[in-house]
Length: 82
Image (cartoon, rainbow, N blue to C red):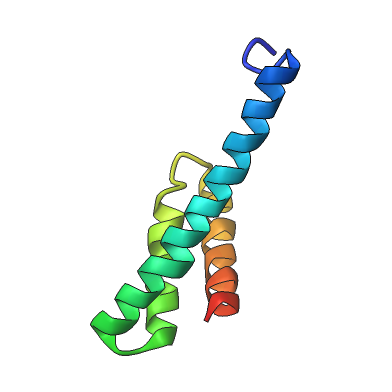
């Protein structure tokens, strides 16, 4: 509970941080990495899978069964982006 935002200023900063983190992840993983991997391997499907591997490896602090779910989410979000 000590790390939760308490004041309205802290809550506002928390919301801004949460929104910016998700936006930056999408720009990096589904924007930049898919384009770069597509250019590198010449195949969009492989690019989607590669970015999902990188995306899920960034979440290795989570339990392994959740990392598998994150990998699937990375594939789904990558397919939507393509």
